[in-house]
Length: 400
Image (cartoon, rainbow, N blue to C red; front, top):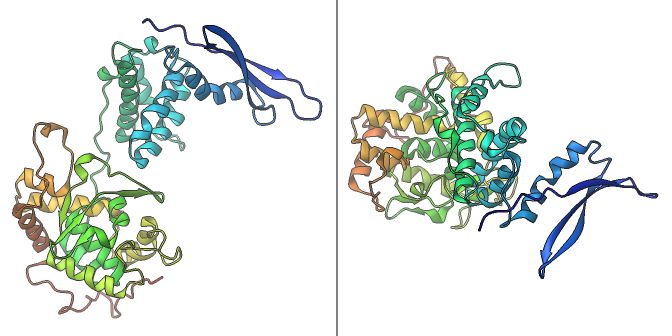
């Protein structure tokens, strides 16, 4: 059945004596074979002073009343349907990221454009000219992400039969980084670990040895750690205190835990006030264990001050430890397939490979090689004292 014309309805101001005038939206529905007119309150003129403000508020409502009957007329309506129907299926961090790109870039520029009016070369030129708030050009990776979100929206339209082709497929963008990711050298990592208190040292060692993403790291609970089998079961991720799925299906894999890492985890559990199976491994004392610690707070208050004392000027974040592990695995000439499984990285070039669910001996050996490269074959926290960082006094770790 051919889709009917998209119903826009009508927007008008309702005059009121005792309350501010209000915007009212009038439209019709088919009920029992009859056309029934309806109206819905949008908001007051104080909330939406101008018609275009009220029109923006109507975008989602129009999608709902046209659901299953009409074809979106423009990109704004298509984006609204995409956010309603497709985005909720994705991880929360992805929802936040995609919504930001749609609301800040794509809809403001292309919202009023018909789907058929979008041309590849025009989108490409627009992407090249996007600037940040400070007037500087956006990074290639940001432009590539905006392009990918726009492409996903058109793929959504194709699935619903509202478009026959995706014009974004032919849009060329480079995702090349402006600078290479920064990560710690083995010597820097060793010095950092030796000068962190138990909690932060356990976090950094666990992240450096496994490469798990920060949302997975801080969502870990003690029940996810199998000390006997020596694995961590990664099944969830947390972002802005919202627990959701991992980044990809491939991320939901068991991760091997080296004996050195297991020892640190056991020591931290013995010290922690929150050691029950259901407790977060890195629980917030301020939140009485109901939430994990904030990743950025740990970096700002604990890890980066120690790095500054060490004279390390690199901008180190949680993902830096994942980059470091990947680099070390390459340096140790670990098989690419094994490294990919250890990092649980969904590589689109390996689409026909079936990832093994169990932790293989090859993964454990790869992790062993990486830790030896990072820490040295005879490294032990219990037998080595904190290093002097080139000063007469030892660095005193920052403690909450």
